[in-house]
Image (cartoon, rainbow, N blue to C red; front, side, top):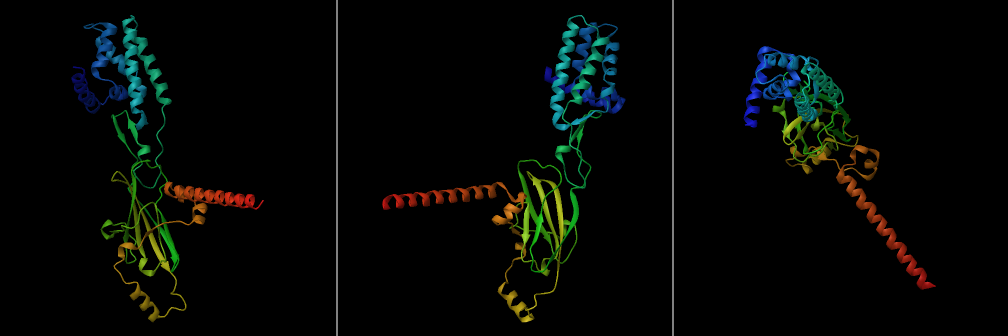
Length: 324
Protein backbone atom coordinates (compact mmCIF):
# COMPACT_ATOMS: atom_id res chain seq x y z
CA UNK A 1 0.00 0.00 0.00
CA UNK A 2 2.89 2.36 0.76
CA UNK A 3 4.36 1.81 -2.69
CA UNK A 4 0.95 2.40 -4.27
CA UNK A 5 0.56 5.68 -2.38
CA UNK A 6 4.04 6.81 -3.47
CA UNK A 7 3.36 5.95 -7.10
CA UNK A 8 0.13 7.91 -7.08
CA UNK A 9 1.66 10.89 -5.31
CA UNK A 10 4.51 11.48 -7.79
CA UNK A 11 2.24 12.27 -10.81
CA UNK A 12 0.14 14.54 -8.60
CA UNK A 13 3.28 16.41 -7.53
CA UNK A 14 4.45 16.90 -11.10
CA UNK A 15 0.94 18.03 -12.11
CA UNK A 16 0.96 20.64 -9.36
CA UNK A 17 4.25 22.07 -10.63
CA UNK A 18 3.20 22.07 -14.28
CA UNK A 19 -0.38 23.29 -13.97
CA UNK A 20 -0.60 25.41 -10.85
CA UNK A 21 2.92 26.84 -11.15
CA UNK A 22 3.51 26.84 -7.40
CA UNK A 23 7.29 27.32 -7.01
CA UNK A 24 7.01 27.41 -3.23
CA UNK A 25 6.31 23.67 -3.31
CA UNK A 26 9.48 22.97 -5.27
CA UNK A 27 11.86 21.03 -3.00
CA UNK A 28 8.98 19.90 -0.82
CA UNK A 29 7.28 18.25 -3.81
CA UNK A 30 10.50 16.64 -5.02
CA UNK A 31 11.41 14.93 -1.77
CA UNK A 32 8.08 14.32 -0.01
CA UNK A 33 4.78 12.80 -1.12
CA UNK A 34 1.32 14.31 -0.83
CA UNK A 35 0.26 11.50 1.51
CA UNK A 36 3.18 12.27 3.82
CA UNK A 37 2.33 15.97 3.98
CA UNK A 38 -1.38 15.25 4.49
CA UNK A 39 -0.60 12.76 7.25
CA UNK A 40 1.53 15.35 9.10
CA UNK A 41 -1.25 17.95 8.97
CA UNK A 42 -3.84 15.40 10.09
CA UNK A 43 -1.67 14.61 13.11
CA UNK A 44 -1.40 18.33 13.95
CA UNK A 45 -5.06 19.39 13.57
CA UNK A 46 -7.08 16.17 13.32
CA UNK A 47 -8.38 13.94 10.53
CA UNK A 48 -11.35 16.15 9.51
CA UNK A 49 -10.50 19.43 11.15
CA UNK A 50 -11.57 22.68 9.41
CA UNK A 51 -7.96 23.79 9.87
CA UNK A 52 -6.63 21.00 7.64
CA UNK A 53 -6.48 23.18 4.52
CA UNK A 54 -4.89 26.00 6.51
CA UNK A 55 -2.23 23.58 7.75
CA UNK A 56 -1.39 22.42 4.21
CA UNK A 57 -1.08 26.02 3.00
CA UNK A 58 1.16 26.88 5.95
CA UNK A 59 3.31 23.85 5.19
CA UNK A 60 4.01 24.92 1.61
CA UNK A 61 4.35 28.60 2.45
CA UNK A 62 7.12 27.84 4.93
CA UNK A 63 9.28 26.44 2.14
CA UNK A 64 9.00 29.37 -0.29
CA UNK A 65 12.69 30.09 0.17
CA UNK A 66 13.57 26.75 -1.43
CA UNK A 67 11.64 27.34 -4.66
CA UNK A 68 14.66 27.93 -6.94
CA UNK A 69 17.15 25.68 -5.17
CA UNK A 70 19.79 23.93 -7.28
CA UNK A 71 21.99 21.24 -5.74
CA UNK A 72 24.76 18.89 -6.76
CA UNK A 73 23.11 15.94 -8.49
CA UNK A 74 25.08 13.48 -6.37
CA UNK A 75 23.67 15.10 -3.21
CA UNK A 76 19.99 14.49 -4.03
CA UNK A 77 19.87 11.23 -2.04
CA UNK A 78 21.33 13.03 0.97
CA UNK A 79 18.68 15.73 0.68
CA UNK A 80 15.94 13.12 0.30
CA UNK A 81 17.07 11.45 3.53
CA UNK A 82 17.04 14.83 5.28
CA UNK A 83 13.45 15.49 4.19
CA UNK A 84 12.48 12.02 5.43
CA UNK A 85 14.03 12.78 8.82
CA UNK A 86 12.20 16.12 8.86
CA UNK A 87 8.87 14.37 8.26
CA UNK A 88 9.50 12.00 11.16
CA UNK A 89 10.44 14.90 13.43
CA UNK A 90 7.25 16.77 12.53
CA UNK A 91 5.17 13.68 13.25
CA UNK A 92 6.77 13.37 16.67
CA UNK A 93 6.14 17.04 17.35
CA UNK A 94 2.48 16.67 16.32
CA UNK A 95 2.10 13.66 18.58
CA UNK A 96 3.44 15.83 21.42
CA UNK A 97 0.64 18.36 20.79
CA UNK A 98 2.93 20.89 19.14
CA UNK A 99 1.79 23.75 16.91
CA UNK A 100 2.24 23.64 13.15
CA UNK A 101 2.44 27.47 13.03
CA UNK A 102 5.91 27.27 14.62
CA UNK A 103 6.93 23.74 13.59
CA UNK A 104 6.85 24.34 9.81
CA UNK A 105 8.98 27.55 9.75
CA UNK A 106 11.52 25.94 12.08
CA UNK A 107 11.73 22.87 9.84
CA UNK A 108 12.20 25.08 6.76
CA UNK A 109 15.05 27.02 8.40
CA UNK A 110 16.82 23.81 9.35
CA UNK A 111 16.42 22.54 5.79
CA UNK A 112 17.99 25.73 4.39
CA UNK A 113 21.03 25.21 6.61
CA UNK A 114 21.37 21.63 5.45
CA UNK A 115 21.23 22.70 1.79
CA UNK A 116 23.95 25.33 2.30
CA UNK A 117 26.21 22.61 3.69
CA UNK A 118 25.78 20.25 0.73
CA UNK A 119 28.69 19.74 -1.61
CA UNK A 120 28.39 22.19 -4.49
CA UNK A 121 28.34 21.04 -8.09
CA UNK A 122 31.36 21.86 -10.20
CA UNK A 123 31.12 24.84 -12.50
CA UNK A 124 30.78 24.25 -16.24
CA UNK A 125 34.14 24.55 -17.97
CA UNK A 126 33.88 25.72 -21.59
CA UNK A 127 34.19 25.18 -24.43
CA UNK A 128 32.93 21.61 -24.83
CA UNK A 129 32.16 18.20 -23.39
CA UNK A 130 29.55 16.27 -21.45
CA UNK A 131 30.55 17.18 -17.89
CA UNK A 132 28.81 14.79 -15.51
CA UNK A 133 30.50 16.24 -12.44
CA UNK A 134 28.75 19.54 -13.14
CA UNK A 135 25.27 17.98 -13.29
CA UNK A 136 22.73 19.79 -11.10
CA UNK A 137 19.33 18.90 -9.66
CA UNK A 138 16.67 21.65 -9.90
CA UNK A 139 13.94 21.71 -7.30
CA UNK A 140 11.85 24.02 -9.47
CA UNK A 141 11.00 21.11 -11.77
CA UNK A 142 12.37 18.02 -10.01
CA UNK A 143 14.80 17.29 -12.85
CA UNK A 144 18.55 17.40 -13.53
CA UNK A 145 20.58 19.13 -16.22
CA UNK A 146 24.18 19.27 -17.38
CA UNK A 147 26.19 22.06 -18.96
CA UNK A 148 24.78 23.41 -22.21
CA UNK A 149 28.00 22.82 -24.15
CA UNK A 150 28.64 21.09 -27.48
CA UNK A 151 30.21 17.66 -27.64
CA UNK A 152 32.69 18.79 -30.33
CA UNK A 153 35.69 20.79 -29.14
CA UNK A 154 37.27 23.50 -31.34
CA UNK A 155 39.92 22.37 -33.82
CA UNK A 156 43.48 22.71 -32.53
CA UNK A 157 46.19 23.56 -35.05
CA UNK A 158 49.41 21.52 -34.94
CA UNK A 159 52.29 22.50 -37.23
CA UNK A 160 55.42 20.35 -37.64
CA UNK A 161 58.32 20.25 -40.06
CA UNK A 162 58.45 17.36 -42.45
CA UNK A 163 60.38 14.48 -40.94
CA UNK A 164 59.74 15.56 -37.36
CA UNK A 165 57.41 13.96 -34.85
CA UNK A 166 53.79 15.07 -34.41
CA UNK A 167 52.13 14.34 -31.07
CA UNK A 168 48.48 14.67 -30.03
CA UNK A 169 47.19 14.76 -26.44
CA UNK A 170 43.52 13.84 -26.04
CA UNK A 171 43.10 15.75 -22.77
CA UNK A 172 40.13 17.87 -21.66
CA UNK A 173 40.06 20.58 -19.01
CA UNK A 174 37.19 19.07 -17.03
CA UNK A 175 37.08 16.05 -14.73
CA UNK A 176 36.40 12.68 -16.31
CA UNK A 177 34.88 9.64 -14.60
CA UNK A 178 37.50 7.23 -13.31
CA UNK A 179 36.02 4.04 -14.76
CA UNK A 180 35.41 2.65 -18.27
CA UNK A 181 37.09 5.53 -20.12
CA UNK A 182 38.23 4.68 -23.65
CA UNK A 183 39.88 6.66 -26.45
CA UNK A 184 39.46 6.12 -30.18
CA UNK A 185 41.16 7.98 -33.04
CA UNK A 186 40.01 8.90 -36.55
CA UNK A 187 41.63 10.68 -39.52
CA UNK A 188 40.35 12.87 -42.35
CA UNK A 189 43.13 13.17 -44.93
CA UNK A 190 43.68 15.26 -48.02
CA UNK A 191 44.54 18.39 -46.06
CA UNK A 192 40.96 18.77 -44.80
CA UNK A 193 40.33 20.93 -41.74
CA UNK A 194 36.91 19.66 -40.71
CA UNK A 195 34.65 18.42 -37.95
CA UNK A 196 32.31 16.58 -40.32
CA UNK A 197 32.35 12.98 -39.13
CA UNK A 198 31.51 11.67 -42.60
CA UNK A 199 35.08 12.46 -43.73
CA UNK A 200 36.80 10.49 -40.97
CA UNK A 201 37.95 6.89 -40.96
CA UNK A 202 39.01 4.79 -37.96
CA UNK A 203 42.63 4.41 -36.89
CA UNK A 204 42.58 0.98 -35.19
CA UNK A 205 46.23 0.99 -34.10
CA UNK A 206 45.86 4.16 -32.05
CA UNK A 207 44.79 3.76 -28.44
CA UNK A 208 45.14 5.77 -25.27
CA UNK A 209 45.04 9.52 -24.79
CA UNK A 210 48.47 10.09 -26.38
CA UNK A 211 49.34 9.33 -30.00
CA UNK A 212 52.08 10.38 -32.40
CA UNK A 213 53.15 10.31 -36.02
CA UNK A 214 56.81 9.90 -36.96
CA UNK A 215 58.18 10.93 -39.28
CA UNK A 216 55.49 13.37 -40.34
CA UNK A 217 55.02 13.55 -44.12
CA UNK A 218 53.00 15.76 -46.44
CA UNK A 219 50.48 12.93 -46.85
CA UNK A 220 49.67 13.26 -43.15
CA UNK A 221 48.16 16.73 -43.59
CA UNK A 222 44.57 16.65 -42.39
CA UNK A 223 42.41 16.46 -39.27
CA UNK A 224 42.85 13.88 -36.55
CA UNK A 225 39.99 13.29 -34.13
CA UNK A 226 39.98 11.70 -30.69
CA UNK A 227 36.70 10.53 -29.12
CA UNK A 228 36.54 10.10 -25.34
CA UNK A 229 33.88 7.64 -24.23
CA UNK A 230 32.58 6.19 -20.99
CA UNK A 231 30.85 2.86 -21.48
CA UNK A 232 30.28 3.68 -25.17
CA UNK A 233 28.77 7.09 -24.36
CA UNK A 234 30.71 9.98 -25.96
CA UNK A 235 31.94 12.59 -23.49
CA UNK A 236 33.97 14.78 -25.86
CA UNK A 237 35.40 14.88 -29.37
CA UNK A 238 38.74 16.63 -29.89
CA UNK A 239 40.13 17.67 -33.27
CA UNK A 240 43.74 18.34 -34.34
CA UNK A 241 44.57 19.82 -37.74
CA UNK A 242 48.07 18.71 -38.69
CA UNK A 243 49.95 21.00 -41.06
CA UNK A 244 53.25 19.55 -42.30
CA UNK A 245 55.63 22.15 -43.68
CA UNK A 246 59.12 22.26 -45.13
CA UNK A 247 60.85 20.97 -48.31
CA UNK A 248 62.21 17.43 -48.72
CA UNK A 249 65.72 16.72 -47.31
CA UNK A 250 68.57 18.21 -49.37
CA UNK A 251 70.09 14.94 -50.52
CA UNK A 252 66.76 13.48 -51.58
CA UNK A 253 66.15 13.23 -55.30
CA UNK A 254 62.98 12.30 -57.08
CA UNK A 255 64.40 8.86 -57.85
CA UNK A 256 65.27 8.27 -54.21
CA UNK A 257 61.82 9.39 -53.15
CA UNK A 258 60.18 7.05 -55.66
CA UNK A 259 62.41 4.16 -54.55
CA UNK A 260 61.52 4.81 -50.91
CA UNK A 261 57.81 4.84 -51.69
CA UNK A 262 58.15 1.48 -53.47
CA UNK A 263 59.89 -0.03 -50.45
CA UNK A 264 57.24 1.33 -48.15
CA UNK A 265 54.33 0.35 -50.32
CA UNK A 266 51.61 -1.33 -48.29
CA UNK A 267 47.96 -0.64 -47.43
CA UNK A 268 48.94 1.43 -44.38
CA UNK A 269 46.30 4.16 -44.44
CA UNK A 270 44.92 2.86 -41.16
CA UNK A 271 48.39 2.92 -39.51
CA UNK A 272 49.21 6.63 -39.64
CA UNK A 273 48.99 7.02 -35.89
CA UNK A 274 51.05 4.81 -33.64
CA UNK A 275 50.61 4.42 -29.89
CA UNK A 276 53.08 6.49 -27.89
CA UNK A 277 55.65 4.30 -26.17
CA UNK A 278 57.84 6.81 -24.34
CA UNK A 279 61.49 6.33 -23.50
CA UNK A 280 62.75 6.62 -19.92
CA UNK A 281 63.81 10.22 -20.56
CA UNK A 282 60.37 11.11 -21.93
CA UNK A 283 58.68 9.49 -18.94
CA UNK A 284 60.70 11.60 -16.52
CA UNK A 285 60.25 14.77 -18.58
CA UNK A 286 56.47 14.40 -19.02
CA UNK A 287 54.60 13.55 -15.79
CA UNK A 288 51.37 12.90 -17.68
CA UNK A 289 53.07 9.94 -19.38
CA UNK A 290 53.27 8.06 -16.08
CA UNK A 291 50.29 5.83 -16.74
CA UNK A 292 49.72 2.74 -14.53
CA UNK A 293 51.36 0.47 -17.12
CA UNK A 294 54.40 2.76 -17.43
CA UNK A 295 54.70 2.97 -13.65
CA UNK A 296 54.62 -0.83 -13.50
CA UNK A 297 57.43 -1.05 -16.08
CA UNK A 298 59.52 1.43 -14.12
CA UNK A 299 58.96 -0.60 -10.94
CA UNK A 300 60.04 -3.80 -12.73
CA UNK A 301 63.18 -2.12 -14.06
CA UNK A 302 64.01 -0.80 -10.60
CA UNK A 303 63.52 -4.25 -9.07
CA UNK A 304 65.76 -5.88 -11.70
CA UNK A 305 68.45 -3.28 -11.16
CA UNK A 306 68.31 -3.76 -7.40
CA UNK A 307 68.47 -7.56 -7.74
CA UNK A 308 71.43 -7.34 -10.13
CA UNK A 309 73.31 -5.05 -7.74
CA UNK A 310 72.62 -7.44 -4.84
CA UNK A 311 73.92 -10.46 -6.81
CA UNK A 312 77.09 -8.64 -7.88
CA UNK A 313 77.75 -7.56 -4.29
CA UNK A 314 77.26 -11.12 -3.05
CA UNK A 315 79.61 -12.52 -5.70
CA UNK A 316 82.26 -9.94 -4.84
CA UNK A 317 81.94 -10.79 -1.13
CA UNK A 318 82.31 -14.52 -1.85
CA UNK A 319 85.33 -13.88 -4.01
CA UNK A 320 86.90 -11.62 -1.40
CA UNK A 321 86.30 -14.10 1.41
CA UNK A 322 87.66 -17.07 -0.62
CA UNK A 323 90.86 -15.09 -1.37
CA UNK A 324 91.43 -14.43 2.32
